Length: 346
Image (cartoon, rainbow, N blue to C red; front, side):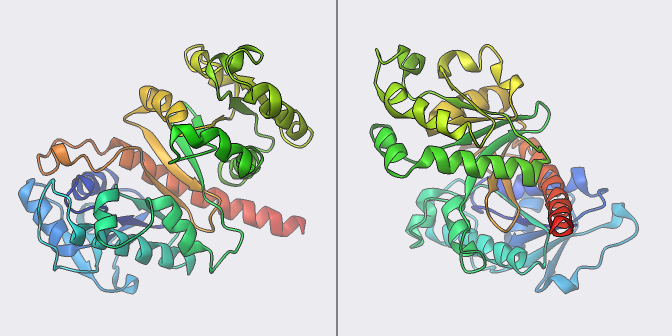
């Protein structure tokens, strides 16, 4: 398989974790290509003392895999060498390069020139300084996918491969005071469960996925004592969805993870950002992976940010990026099997 690694913000830890991941995975049967800046990759390899052979290419057909994995070079599909290293700083040029890399990699995947993309972290402020109006990877990739698939709707799923923990979010970057209204207005509960169920079947080979849904209020409102959402519309909506999906809840969020109830389900649907991400990162900080389901392409990323505070210091841990790469390979292979089985059934 051909996996594209986008460089992320060149002032963050993206280049470092990519270089370290290549060292760990170069004996793999898969081919890895960085999309970003050849000059920045060379700079970080030298700055960090990482002896990784790097080759600049201008098109994917220039890749020349060798029989000996020890001699394999890290190919970089270079977009620009004009960005200067300002390690740990927020910079418009860096944000622009990061977004160009995402667009290039996504387009190659959409055109089926590559099997999957794994994205190193970007910085939201830097991409806004560069003039982009997107919040991050997810909505940008959904935008790029729409011309190829009008039904494309991104679904964020946090995955820990070692423990098979999967957490999806019904709302993502929504202020807490707006969560309840957003859930109800956008029919996000039904939409999220439909998307999550489909992703678990298509990408994870789970034929009838068991999904747990967390409550919105403390103690899932204690029968309407602490908030009315659960009793007025969340539980009734779940009861209707149970006719179609293997969905369970509403569960009180505070004790759910502590009691390890997630082990009884194939995935958990959290209703807002921190409700899902805080426990997930507590349980899988080094190995967590962000999967963008619901798109015609396979995209994963490490479950951490640009880490400007440690950028360029050589101490960034590549484990989550490696896990993201391995999971991307698994999902890409599973999607091909799913498509084949679907075509046979038709």
